[in-house]
Length: 151
Image (cartoon, rainbow, N blue to C red; front, top):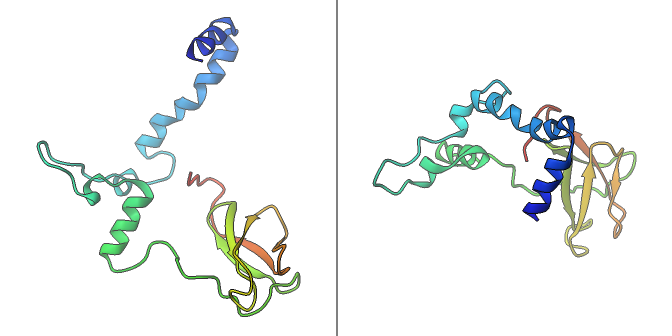
């Protein structure tokens, strides 16, 4: 497989080869903090030479933010189930907040546990999404930023 890749790169014109390498040019900006996230809060100090690091010392990114929040006595991620006080309709849907443009939601029907969990893919470009089992309508309240990339 790698030999095929090398052969394709050698056969490709110079312009095509630079477009393959170009995405890696943003790494310096990301590590410098110029892209918009604070590197100091996302990286731990690491372990000391000769010692095994703790989870907090070696954690990075979202895992580190979650650990720091737990040390402060709060939850970083909202783990509460959706408030299903009614069956969602087109005029009155169940609203799901999301920082990502796509989110998976598990529907168990209304009242709760009236059917097995059905996973629905909510997309911010959709006006609404519907559970195929109970017909409950969900819509996404996108609270994230178009510039943020969480994955």
